[in-house]
Length: 403
Image 1 (cartoon, rainbow, N blue to C red):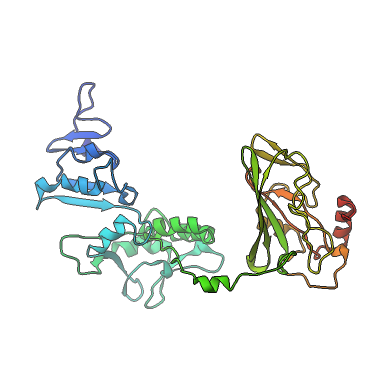
Image 2: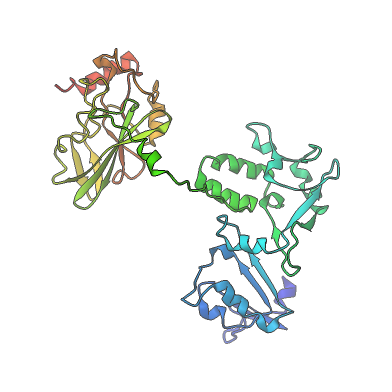
């Protein structure tokens, strides 16, 4: 801007007053530094101090303590005339610096007046509504009268709003909560659509809550487990499989000289059972050691073995290559749930204990899982719910059942 440019010292080859981090102007100077440099934080007296994204500041900078405390100390020369501004996207509830600072303030929020009933309210996420499946029609609904305010009316709402303190405070610290719901640069429809994309992913939802609502993320409270109650939940299923197992996965982690293998059984509602963990050494280009993935039968036993480990593995440069027979071709590799969804008709539920023939059981070998087949491989068992035509084709591909 011309007004600012005219005040700043012109950039010259020998002029130190106009650099990327230092701007000198009539009546003062602007110094920019990072929170990870202790010498910069304690080197310059300042009347006006602005600290941005303080929740990302380190707890200790170069062994000299809290960077916020170091920076604030630079303002003591101007006590009574100083102004300190702390800004940040909030993070975890109970751990963020900006949350602590806001709670010490008068906690101001922006109130708007309903265009229908004049009720004063703060625009909260619960007030953003839209028809099912149509986030593009998101609008703000007055919590008092139910009046609908469309996106085109947002600017009118904001022009008539004002900041109001919601806590007593000490009269010295003002705090402002400013969510993206009030932003003129982002629509309610965009925020609603993004919520739909991230709602099922806790990590992405956490970021959405922090950046769009300007709220802290509250982690689920850790629950203590009574050791006695936990021991009473131990299941003893003998040499066979737990009766609820419908699918088995094998996770294989390749190390320099060995493989780590864990076999997990899965049932309805994603209930899981750890069936065994093995560390394998030696030449992995031949048949895996006997007992790894073999000998498990559906109850009651003596049916097809449930070998989910391939007959051959080749370990090349840390990458696990499967050269065994395939019962189900997965292309491209997919998450386990996608694998289950694709094997229609299929249902992860316990099989009946009796009345099943050999044709009800089909072996499946390991399939690549995700992009890195060198770190994780899974296998699934296609159950009796496959059609008879599919069973016949799979049986021909697999060959005769083991003796």
